[in-house]
Length: 260
Image 1: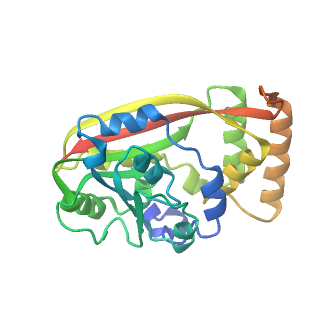
Image 2: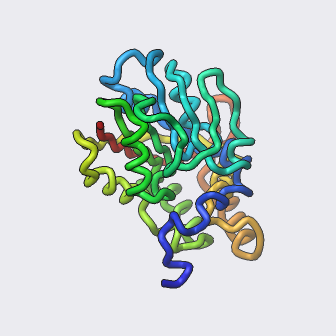
């Protein structure tokens, strides 16, 4: 097997985002409130819940859980990503991996993986999630997926694909949810989808593109990508109510749930 065809968990998942942490923290999208409400539904009073957010990155999803009152362990192996995490009173950051969180047995009510599970060794990670979950606890896998339902989002996707490490890009993230769907130690598998539009400035558009691990940060492909993105923004930008120029990116948030 050539290096380009290795599974994602063998393609430097622990270091691949080290030079992307600041762009990731500033420009990656959040998750819609309806998605967070769905993964918490039925678990009880959020202020009594403990969650482990695995592959927490710069803490985007961990802070959303903390905002709801949960106590959150943000599990992230990458030092640069941990350093870029904005502090939150409800969130404690821990240097560990999905396959070895270091958390006690049956210690959390909820395990979340947002934009991360495809980088893990699925079988080992799910075994670890089962170990740390309390009886009746829940696993939630989330991905934000761009939806090329309009010409702007479609054109953006084409530009990024053209510039990217295509072997990484063409792997469909939500396919990773199949491991959870077929895991015998979990039950009550569910799927939920939420469509939404994200307003973005030019700086946010560029920052988003550079936060992706498969996009070049220098060289001819990088410069060509920036030139095409500038043209795309100028072509589609509109003024908002404050007189600022922005575009709208179409997203679908995919939520996959199962219980212990």
